[in-house]
Image (cartoon, rainbow, N blue to C red):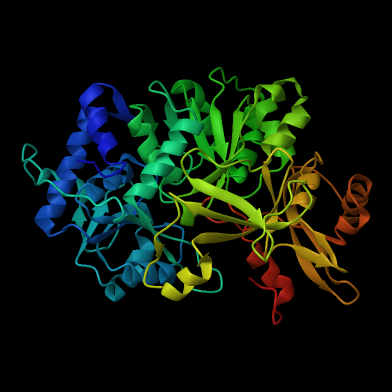
Length: 530
């Protein structure tokens, strides 16, 4: 009889073969796989006693702590569906998601309870569980998490649950921009196949020590919550992105693997402490979220000695569908050339299915690195659909292909490289200008800390590029100097026609630039605000 594909089985395996291995490190707390498994099972038992059954939805709003890991396994091994929440959302967005997801229960961290306090009366919840945090106090009416676990018998055997690998494992909400967030239905099978890609392509081994810099609520930590357990490796929790602490943990905990958006890389390489720290483990770091500039990858490898791995995907694809495969032939290239290659999104992973770049008529673009098309994909990791939204599901999945909305080219070796989001492409006087290409050029300037390039209205050309720049500390740079630098290093029509200097750029919780917020400043009342 075939067993269903589910990442939950990796917990059983880890406890069987590595019971005394340290599974989770959270600050000064450590749990072996046996201890972690015991806490997970007690959570499951408590959920059963509260009335949670197979198919029920449980919302969870926690940072990267051992409690969050426990929820992934404790909720899902009952056949219930976990709804990971972004704790940086507004109270209104959280109210919409909790109610729209049909969650019966919420497990929330005390530090992030304030927005829930504001909306508690609007929520269709039966129970709230609160994880206590030192120095924090909430007025939420709820049950303390540790008391919740201690109230059950630890030796009671959990009931057997029959899984269908195509049933929901998690319901992950994408951030809304001009509309409400969408609930992405991810299955046991999709999570399993994505985690298998994580294991294989990020080269996860039993002795790895994985630092959870990436929010676990974001596409289930890209699959890291499952893959690390599968190898019997060690999870190191991180409550928030703290560059000095991360640099300390590299050596203190012998970190060998982590994931993060380009903004996290930028924070690390620009941390003053980075100049003096010596990282001997040479950690592998996977990055995705927005196309990383080659110059940023170069800095990460040169300053910190990180071995960068570029991956690409979306919440709707569990998330991995491309990775930048590294070949020995690339080792002889210069650091700049290597960084340029690593900035590409790459090729299909082994287990996800088929991905390609196509024209509007569905024909694949030529592999010449020039023809622009949209990335589409189908196969093992594509979502089941948007929860309770058949119209948007059908608009995104057409003839079995999921349409990403990302514009890219395919190089002669098959490597795909994103040039822009469809909505971020700048069309100036009939010329297509990739905002990410202009950003990549500006990141090479030593005085540029962060940059976003967007289109702004122009009477003559329709729209032209605007560079919005965060300068390095104590740096001084003028608009004319930026424009001249760009014109000296790229085609003149691609150079920004205007420059704005700001203290910070708006980002999502996972580090993606929120360009729609920037566009709203210049396109209010016109068509291009998404």
